[in-house]
Length: 309
Image (cartoon, rainbow, N blue to C red):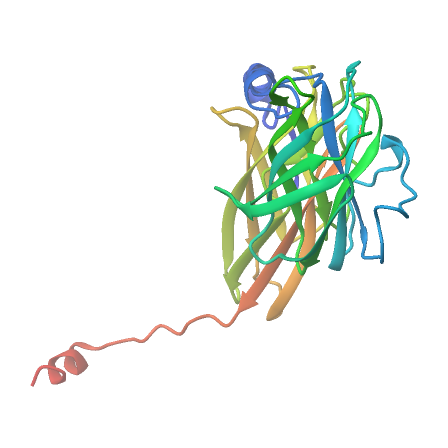
């Protein structure tokens, strides 16, 4: 079927190389596989904006967290502390960095568990929280809410997360939240069990093609999990979009996307690329703008000579 390709084995001759490269990706480049069982994590819950959070949230366990939402506009990103290992002691501080697509803008910040400082960082904003007494490292609890204006698909990324129990800071995992994404069921498991989860380095691909022409671009996709034979199939329901994937030397897959505008009207056309695994589906939104072809000015030798005389 047009627009469908699988990997490993995107082409049959790549099957063995795909397995080997994917295993390398899982060990060295997958954020989850780099530390399959963190001692704690911060998960992001995504929902349409609502008034109040810290004292009114109805999310009381990790299993209730919604990591992927199709919501756009005014969207809440609620951060929850999720213990994974058996930690004892009071949490004294958090520090982590936020990043999001450049077209998103922050509207408000509400911190639940202490006093905070929000300041510019290397790639986004850095939030430092001095945690109030009573928050224990073996408990699930809300940390903060960021309300963002979300005009297009993307994700809130948490990086460089640190927690301190009094003996010095140590690393914990940040689980992103995605908004404006039209579909997808691949999420981080609360128990961090092994799963074949597809992901990509983008949530939105925007392309422009001249009327009657075409355009090609690419992004990187991968699967996280400890099974090197975890299969992923890349496909699109649009007959004007071709998808091809092959193992990348740096791990994961290079996914090549070609849009054919020859049968499309002027304007905007939307579809998705789906990355399907045995356990879930991930989606990348595709937005193609078909524009008027730029006319080619034809010159004669006589016209060229007249320009210089």
